[in-house]
Image 1 (cartoon, rainbow over the protein chains, first blue to last red):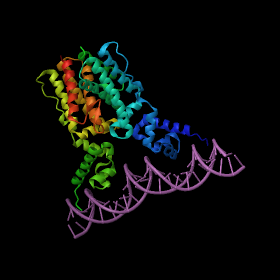
Image 2 (image 1 turned 90 degrees about the vertical axis):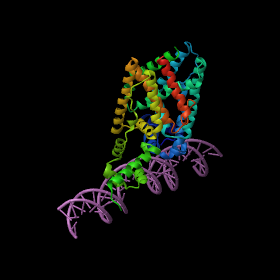
Image 3 (image 1 turned 135 degrees about the horizontal axis):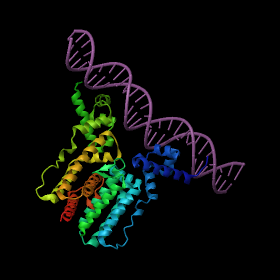
Length: 194
Length: 194
DNA sequence: TTTGATTGTTACCTTTTGGTTACATACTTT
DNA sequence: AAAGTATGTAACCAAAAGGTAACAATCAAA
């Protein structure tokens, strides 16, 4: 028997990640974590207190919003800036299965961890809106609506894609589908900023 | 003791609806149904076989897509047709808490019941796309993308609104928020069909 | 009115999940 | 080396979930 708290904590957190990746946040329970990690359940309570706390720690050590650096200076004007932003949003969700699970979890739960995440997301969303609004001279409310239209649908379609291949004839599990969506977004901005 | 199969079946189905309305499809279990309906759990199995089957029956007797009658003839051209369609979509989700729960359920489950629903939804979606594409002369793929952008985000935001009040500064639990979104949609179509 | 099928009730079983108690083993400090 | 503390293990408990067998009451047909 080797004693190493640091290591077991990491084993636990690794198990959490594995479970989330496969079955989502809803599936993270004491028994599941012990089964996957091989660590005795008592230690989970000792080191993390509760599952909620464990999830909080997991999310804390993981920075989901790192990808989002929307502070760059646009070279090609608002139009290209807007396109770029939302393409980035798509790529972010594409590359992160855990983020997709997080978004799904948010839809059926309510706890301090989630509230924090919402706050952060709200901040970032507002930054984008602010930027686009200022650059385009458009009303903030309008920009917020258009922005929500895109990020909302992208979030939804990526969540859906985990269990379903087609939405409105778009192949949401293949690049082709997402390219079509990107083209749609670009088309829209071309018209809006004509 | 009164014997009346018809009645108890209805009691069970009523309980199912009540549970869904409050906690969603995920919460529909044998014990929950017996507790809410007052009907013995044995009868659930006898009359419906399983929970999956019960849910299938529930959904079958309920026609979620009744609201969607997109076959009307547009009077004011494509632009107004498009606006109208998606305003309808918003109103549909607004008025049906159960539909919101259904959409959420779809994100984390996969069973024959859900697959059927997807098929139906896909049909209706394609009808809209077909119609708009024909009327506008636009490429179907493009119309599909724009259409998905709207319905996807509306679905997402309504699901989110059950646990959260704000998204991108939009008040998704108040008419004001949804009006802003409608204005955004209208703005978009005004530009697209300029 | 008796027989048989249908409907309802009771009581039980198993599995899963969350959570704790008591004990054993290793490390660290004096 | 002894004592105390931190870490790990085993065993257990209660609650909740899904599921079934066996019996009781009612209804309908003969």
